[in-house]
Length: 161
Image 1 (cartoon, rainbow, N blue to C red):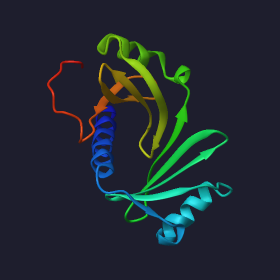
Image 2 (cartoon, helix red, strand yellow):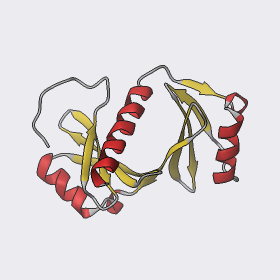
Image 3 (cartoon, helix red, strand yellow):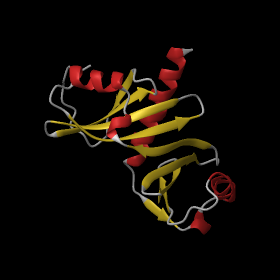
């Protein structure tokens, strides 16, 4: 079960990274499929200042609520994929911080967010590792899942994990 969750998380993270590398198409709310708009409204009825984009095979809405950045992602069929919510760095699980300190010595934690998916909750941490920015995915208890590789990153060989 645990391996299945990790494999599913890795697959989805990879798909989202690949999708985010395509051309960004900002959309008005009337360009969003009605089932997505309806689901979004049921989850976030009183939200304003929403920016909609179509990135690859996903629709994404981004907004700020009470000073906290949030995002929700849907697939092209209108299915909810995941929700993201910015968190402070002191909310990152200690096990994740320990992993980063051990495997990326000297790296600086830049930002973090919770990632909620149907199968599990995760914490995504963005770090600055020398001149390279990295995104690391952890379970909500801080167990390392994977490094999310952006398609425009150099394919350099490293042994950090």
